[in-house]
Length: 199
Image 1: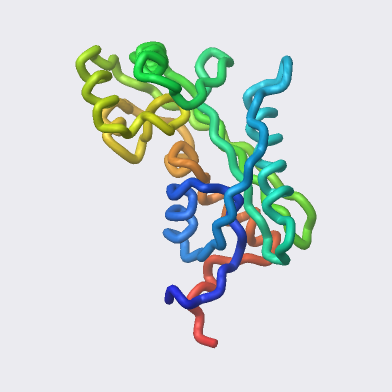
Image 2: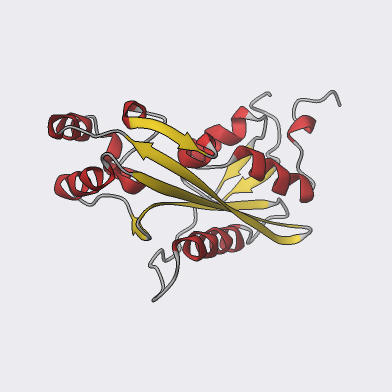
């Protein structure tokens, strides 16, 4: 796909991982990050939380464009508790120690605003972590990788060596479930197969 091709959708996210995942299935996105309040509501479940944020991002991101607009949000969930992005080294250590040797869930919601209205889905993936040694947590923090990642780790990076197995969508843990995303986009008239097709 040539860089001069027109975008097929708007991505309401600053995440380079989501842009790269869309590009991997042939979809060129116009990136327009949005600023939304990500504070969980009182009594809100993790699934409801990520769906609400994905819808809100798609809604805000769709302003001023006719392109279908995609919003997404990912949460790392342990025992029903949402683990956000670490605010410090100590916070990252607490999260990784909690995840060590345990199975947790990664919930990624996708919402697409377009001709068919607002379409959305939430994908849940179970991730089993092996026990993580204290010195590994220190070394991992030193890479800089955990600083802006939900749950304090990135499965597409060095933390892959901590993941013993997963049940569900690998791309959802990275940031965007490609199977479900492609299906939602197709319902909004965006097909990955039209990318690069002869005119």
